[in-house]
Length: 127
Ligand SMILES: [Zn+2]
Image (cartoon, rainbow, N blue to C red; front, top):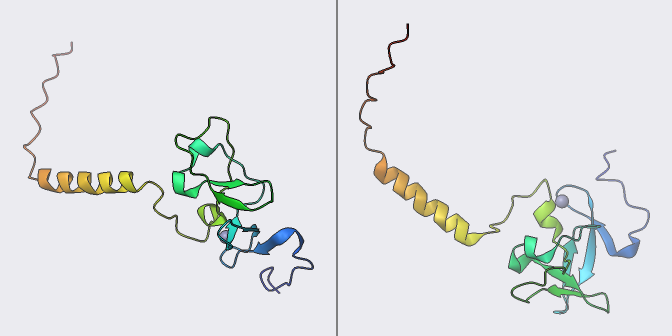
């Protein structure tokens, strides 16, 4: 009865439903003869997407990870539906930031000595 169980009439255009959220995603062939599931109608600028997640479309319709570094300013790319899927955890998009957060968490732990009591309030005498 749910939308998830309803067989789509036609999966034309290489679309399939995400098994996690039920939204449509584009099923596109990659240069490596595999398939990748891309977010439909979404073409952000490549430099706004982490490098390993930039898929660009080739003239034959296949896609490949955009390896140009630094990315062309105006290059658009596509992203995997998995990054936009509300029902899947977000992968580690910025690993260096994740390790920096880990480092900072350890710094916070080291600093977590009991803090000295705040100085007594010394407001200028009002009135
Ligand atoms: Zn999904």
